[in-house]
Length: 299
View 1: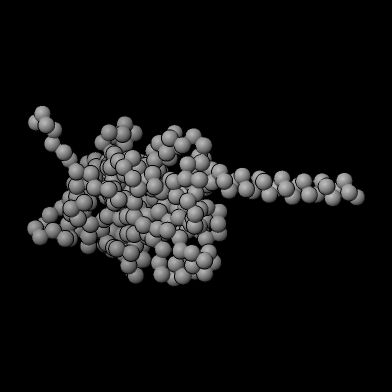
View 2: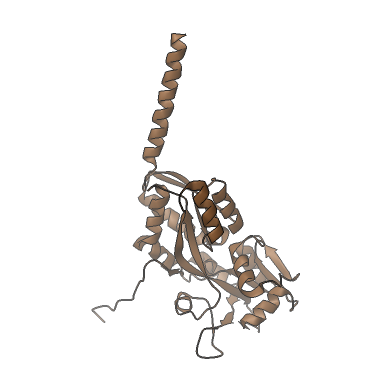
């Protein structure tokens, strides 16, 4: 009986020591966390994770790429500690998390992306007003529109909120299995338009994106905030930062962490110079740091 009791005490002590060790290892530079990421963010998030994990060899981050609504589901059911999406928490969500966690999750904008309008290489119609895009999306124009996924993705939610509103998507709107499939579809359909995140096709230095750009061309969209009427622009860091391109959307993080753990460490990396430069190199607009061009002394 005494031996069984001793074994039981040892197991309790071992479990206690293990839990203490796991908690001690959850620091800004080491430990293990799971994150959920809006699928369209994959290109730049993979680069961010690569650099962060190379600099922090004791850290492990398991990333799942999925629709925006599934990211929020993961956050709600505690299967992930951190998500990356196109919106922050609304007031009702903040109240509910405050009740369940006794603290508010941290969320803010890390960078700005844009929704690119794609057309076939030979398309004559590549200049669009917001009203024309709205007519395409609502089915008033029967020409095909293709987008990544379904109504659960962040890009489609953004387009519905900004262009479709209560009208609903038309029957001419079809869902592709991922952003690359959107590009492939537009490359073979000269009367269709497609919508993808600019981070999939805007990087002129990425060989993979350069090849994708050879298949399609970017449409120009009317600037609604420009003093000059009839000004149309393509998505780029310059047109986003100057508010010349209207289909701009934020990249949010939402973090459930009440102490400085690995999630906080990754967030610090994304918010400071190295992470913000990766956003910039991905042809996005950093939201946390402003990078100004400096003239060379030799010029």
